[in-house]
Image 1 (cartoon, helix red, strand yellow):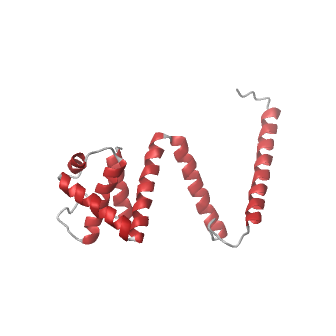
Image 2 (cartoon, one colour):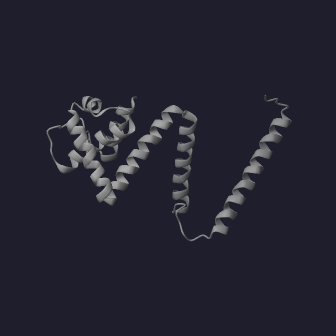
Image 3 (cartoon, one colour):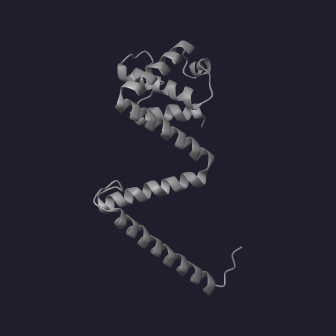
Length: 165
């Protein structure tokens, strides 16, 4: 998948839309989604305004207008600013994942672990009911558990006389 396809797919998925369809629609929300895809493509790739325009079957002036519109949101609308920056970071993360599958797997493991914790404890790590010392004690206890798991695995390897190189 190309960077451009990933950007379009992410915008479509995030807004549950298809920016490549119903191009005649001029509803504010629909236009915003398209402009955001134009903006993200321009900012994330090394494309010129003209080449971004070719991707979306638009002229360079439309892309310039899209970029200016999104930049205006960034400076005047805090909710849209957060949304735009979140989507940009999401896309950059996905692009990184395409480069390094191990990093992608660890990110997925972290996400899954977070979801398990939320289901199990009914809260996130953003909770404010624990002092810093409590957090450090939790981390210490988890580290001790890890040491035990490692020691057990080492003993199993030793008992089987397995030689790893």
